[in-house]
Image (tube, rainbow, N blue to C red):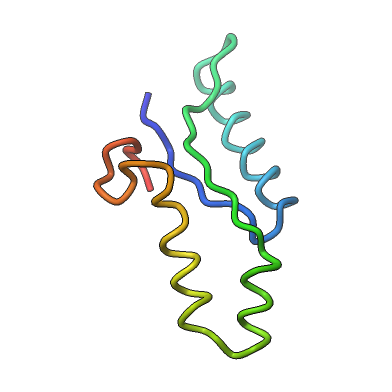
Length: 83
């Protein structure tokens, strides 16, 4: 099974929904107690919204692009097979 890289946090409610949908699809396809292999990074959207409010678009974009790399190896795509 491949490992999925998932970035959440734009709305935590949608992150929960995506996580549930992905795992239900895996369970339906593989049955039993299978669940998805997921590496997830969740952003704090308040930080992004504050940057957007101050028209600091470059900083907001940079935050969204760099924070998931904290997972380790994501930049090199070593830990995930599907992005």
